[in-house]
Length: 131
Image: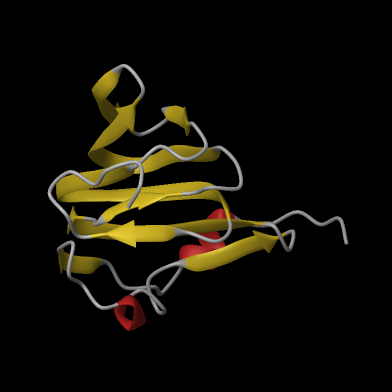
């Protein structure tokens, strides 16, 4: 079904996940991230957190990442090496399919992503392509 979604309303009343680490349990994300849309193969999510995520990758497509508020460093492991993207409100990037990436937002960020499913996670310092 085609519909318009208010991101502001979807995030209203949702908590900020404080102290996020690569080891934060998945059940802590439930109240933080809103599902704005779902195509069955891709989800559109928005939420706010402070801290650092685990490495993640998406084998079934590219991921769109847009910063709605705050600031984050998005680290992406590409074929050419590690890329550090300093991102703030109003910026977006595309993380290429299969590339490991993570977020570091010590002072907080609100992010919206269009994420192909499923998502692989790794708590390694630097995951390998084969992981």
